[in-house]
Image 1: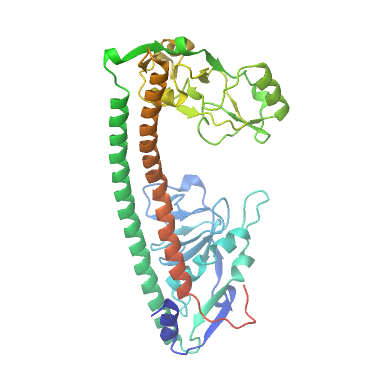
Image 2: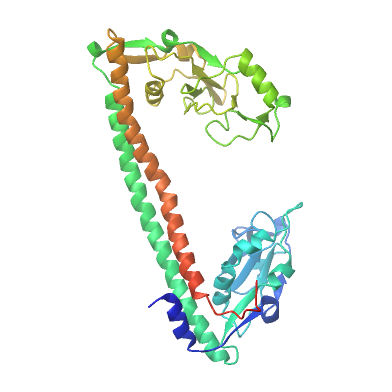
Length: 405
């Protein structure tokens, strides 16, 4: 039996009336508290601008089992539900309890409107959701002429969705634990084989320093005054290296510096020389610029050693790092002195072939661990979408053609 058929059976021919939220309950605005009144030692959570408590207070102004809608800040439009008494600030709308509505039913109904609510947030200045938007939301009231039956239908729907919510949370926790354990095992396996593949008997290799392989290079210095929070070319500093950039430089400056000064070639390995020493990124050729001295690379023509081979070796390299205050730094001399094992040194062709073989094996392990790491959030998202699908089906009450959102 489909969920829709189940809903029809549950209604048993009863009428469903869609009413504006403001016609069935009141949207209450809370009262702001100053931070000096909050304490972690008090009993009642205080909600303002988010579903995480801002702190705790010695009084409450809303009872347990209340539906709330955040109305200011980055979380404006988010629907929540508190199972305990709490204090609502003016950054949190609350819906007054109504004897004709099961509060949990109301919560599930409003969750379906969450995207719509967020789209109605005014973003000029502090993001704000107006009460009039909330008041206009349409809520299905099954069997409105028989309050007892209406509440029974609402309770049955709540029971199903609460059960499904708990099941989804349980499955997500199990999935997270299983995939995390699998990922940990794969990473250990990967590290083991990487270390084995990059360990050679003395007769099989010649250890060459990076200084013998190529020159240490870095980009031209960029002044803070030459950057902006928006622009043409992303500028990566040590704090954003391998992450999302937060600074940009003009294209004209980028073109000039790229032509006049050192710039990495596609495939060369960028290395962090401060902060977390030895973090690496394979340069993909995307137009971008990198902070001088903090992000460096070895200019490598790949006649002796492959860039991807260097990339994997860097992961186990023992960098010669000196301490300077609270910041560690990898100096150019440290880089030049780093010794790298070159297999079959008397036969460049055989050496490069062996490096390529090692890289191919490690690439497979890397792909496996990456796919597992990326697969976890995807699986969790699928569980959430499945939950939302069934929730929406249970709220697929018939609507008159004249009723619209």
